[in-house]
Length: 208
Image (tube, rainbow, N blue to C red; front, side, top):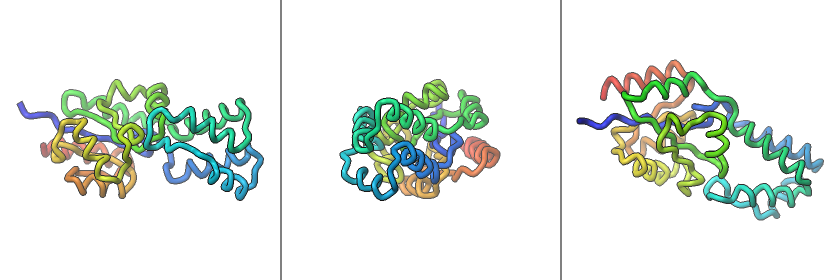
């Protein structure tokens, strides 16, 4: 029996409604407001801080928030508030139409996730959206140790899927991530809206 194809989804800007290109800048502006610092002072303190790379490492989230609070002279209440604000901004709101469409693919295709991420994302996104009931595996950059569009991000994901590149269709909202997938032989769709993406998935499945 032939293996079912894989539909591989990005999260931010695809399964979650969030502007990946602006939310971080807006969040840092709110952090600056909480700290009461001018931008040049904030930047200087961040440059001097020893913040861990939570986008490529596991188990470092606590150290990140502790060091950020220390660098900006924030108390525990302020640290908790900016952390909660970070995850709310990071996760945005669920793209429920696309999430439920992915759930409906069960029996026709296998569904998985490849997402650039920060340590803590698995727990925060699972609490909000229950991705693990739909997608398996869920490959996060902070757990892979490498981020899109680096080739190893896709190759390690293919290994986790136990799949050949031709068996996989990848959906992302950034052209650079699509280009990275194509470079290792994975077909990609640039997500712009649900209708177009769903039609492209259906075309891929029909051709399989």
